[in-house]
Image 1 (cartoon, rainbow, N blue to C red):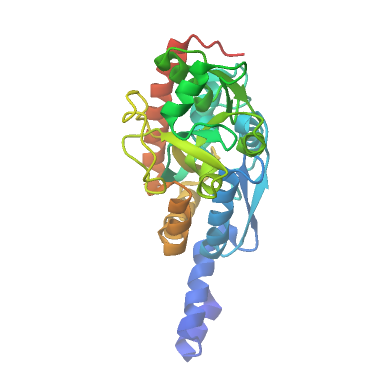
Image 2 (tube, helix red, strand yellow):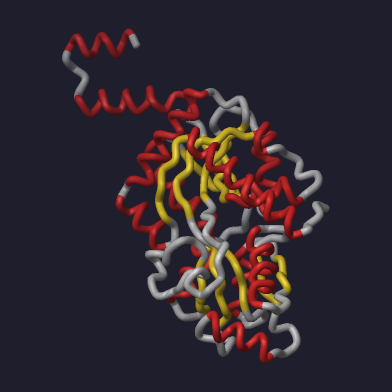
Length: 328
């Protein structure tokens, strides 16, 4: 700092150099370090793609390397356990949606972590909706077509893929079947990527997952998204009706994407990370990419993300309890 003051007095420090020094001071613990952004699902899925878009921009904001590390398996459980075991220094973060943080602890007896005790919110950056899609080999062009096709029946037509066992998509499949008066069987996968591979190969007729998981193959015509959850149609899928429009109420709740750190991470570090996320998602190219993937870009400071997570957990606690599901 003394040398900086000396050069300032001598007039030998340019504005560019001053800016560089400011960035370095802001980075603090991040300088000369690598930040790991944990993802609980395999490469190729929607969450992985989102993490890689943000990692590239966070690298510039934090002035250090940011790498995506896939720890897939058990619906994000392995990644959550890795976060719990990490040092609370801001160098290991977890980018995830609602399932691992809000749902998994309710459906697994011993998840190996307690979201409320082991993690602290850093920032939320988007909301999204889940969607119902049919494979290209399915004759259905609309959701009503699919319902009629299942009712007209053939063995196995009612099997619907979901990205993880005991996940919101799995509960949704059961609820959708009940609302239509027939039996739909959720078929759990280890992530959206292998589920999508089976949909593309016409091994399964339908799937429920997030819009980001489906959007690319929907736009290419390889699968067809026929219904979305939420209160309104999605900007990325303006021609796809909501379940409410189809006469199925109760699918308006909207999940979230956020970044979390280990408990004990200093507030100053959380706030630096939060600021970096805010700046990253405000960039036009980032917003455009995330919106095209079916996300609604929405910055949530760490306090707001915490409130959203708690409220979302309460909603699904009741739904899971009413479903009669027993944690295993």
